[in-house]
Image (cartoon, rainbow, N blue to C red; front, side, top):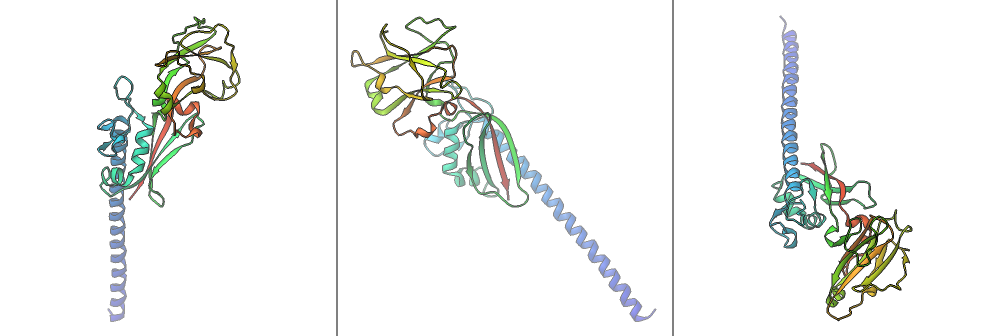
Length: 283
C-alpha cells in the first residue's frame, strides 16, 4: 500500500474518530443540560408549592422585612389558606427580592420573576423579581386565592348583618361598624360598590339612632366616602349603620389609612380573587 493511500486512510479514521468524539460530547452536554433542567424544574416546583402553602416564619415576617418568606394567607381564624398568595407578603418579597429569593431560596444559582395575575377582575397584574429572558426559560403556573387589600374590609353587605331599621332582608341589605373619634383622624371609611351595581343602588348612612326622616341617596360613585356622615352623639364612639335597597349586593364597608392610594379604591381590590401565580426561571 502506498504511503499516500495510508495517509488518506489515517485521515478518514481521524475524521471518523473526531465525529464520534463530537457526538459523544454533544450527547453528554445534552444529558447534563437535561439533568440541570429537570433539577431546576423540581426545585422551582418545590419552592412555589412551599410559598403558596406556607405563611412564612414568623407568620407576619413581611412587617419586619426578615425571617423565612412564605406567601400563604392566614385567615381571621388563624388558619392557613392552602394555595393562596397574600398581596402584602408578595410586595414585601419584591422589596428585597435578591436577598429573600435569589440568595435564600435559590442559593444564588437561579434567576426568577413572579407574577400574580387576577382572573375575571379589573385588577392589573403584579410582577416582582428579575428580568428573565433568553433561551431555556422554565415557567410554572399555579391557581391561587389572592386577597390584595381584603384586610381593610370591615363588613360585607352581601351577607346578612344587624339592621336597626329592621329592613326585610329579601329587599334590603344592612350592616354596621363601630368607630371612635380618633379613628377618623387616622383612617378613611368607604362604602365600595362593584361596577355592576354602581347605578342600581340607593343607600342610607346613619349613626347609632335611626332617624325616621332620613331619605335614600342614589349611589353615583363606586366609592362613597363616609367620614363626613358619621356623628358622635356622646363624643366617645358611634355605631354606623349602612343600608342598601337591594338584597346581597356586591358592596363592602372598608377602613383604609389616610395615605392610602385612592386609585386602588375599587371593589375588586378588597375581595378574594382567583389568580394565576406564575414564576419564570433560568440559570
